[in-house]
Amino acid sequence: MRPDVELRIPVDSAYVSVLRATTVSLAARLDFTLDDIEDLRMAVGEASAMVLPSATPGSDLTCAFHMESGKLTVTLSVPSASAELPEEEGFAWQVLSALTTHAEVRRDGGNLVVAMTMHSTVDA
Image 1 (cartoon, one colour):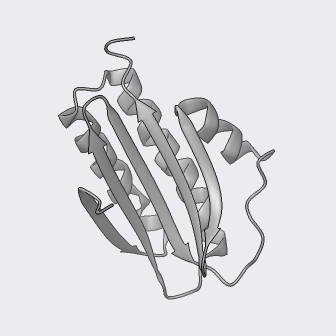
Image 2 (cartoon, one colour):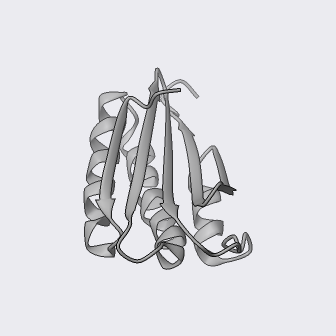
């Protein structure tokens, strides 16, 4: 499925603020609550912290946003030669899974992927 918005940024933590700002803007467009928006902003930061250390130097981080009414799915992907997945017992994973409705980490070919979905709590 083609993403509604897709960003490619250098694999450098200095650019994570661009991902967080885009996430905030898109969640606001979907009428998420302020708390939901802040949770998503933090979740994108934690997901970035999970994938950046494993990224191939000089590559790009790709972030895809899939938008539906009351739902935003964010998928971060980096090329990675490492076969290891980030630990699901680690702090970043615990924060990520606590802040989102659903989160997963996986390998997809030569890429490390972290995907998260957040449902708005407006109607909850």
